[in-house]
Length: 291
Ligand code: GDP
Ligand code: ZN
Image (cartoon, rainbow, N blue to C red; front, top):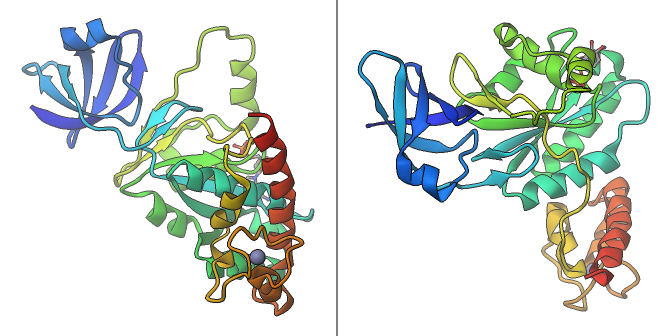
């Protein structure tokens, strides 16, 4: 038996990428009976049939992470694409996506795209801000091919999903990384999806030098995960300071002797990040009440 990764499922068949080729596989009977769902990204053991490029999936290996939209298993990182055009960059969206990916157990990589349109200092400042917090941050331009090698280095050996609203350059970036993928950019894919009533299956695109990328974006639904209000601060790594707040239940809002607010005053925490924390806190509390 050999190990492989499901890259696509289609009417009862699964395409499994192994070290050397792709096998069209059916499921061993017991899996068919159990109605076990197999997702792109699942690692499986297959028994190839001699010389036909076909085989049977014998065993599903343990799934580490499961993403629902799109349905992919074992995604280990999300490329959060935020454009830096002449408008104010949407850092609120970025901070929201950082919470969502961390909560899903997926490593976020921040990709500030369209740097060709941005002020150089603004781009450098943003990179520094997020890198200091501990996030891998890259500056790219799909158009001018800036930072593409850096992005490539992040993708190889991983299963990645791109995230960010439409128009930010996700498909352009992927095409710049690997021109052969023939990914449908923007308008084309949106148009052809409309009016098609069948479910759209997500596939993984295999990169030449190793690693996979989902062909549809993740985290398009932007609800914060369910959590208790006290948990929110744990999604802001820079809030965990050496000094403690007076109250262990401190929400870093109106409480006295708050170490976070002190750090904010001393310029150790960025005011934009703190502001977004307060916005999210309102949202988390409102949601808390509804369950
Ligand atoms: P997606 O919807 O996120 O996949 O975005 P697309 O890849 O379809 O890109 C949306 C638009 O932004 C297209 O017109 C691209 O040509 C443009 N675009 C993408 N990346 C860049 C970039 O780095 N710089 C500039 N100036 N335009 C870009
Ligand atoms: Zn506090």
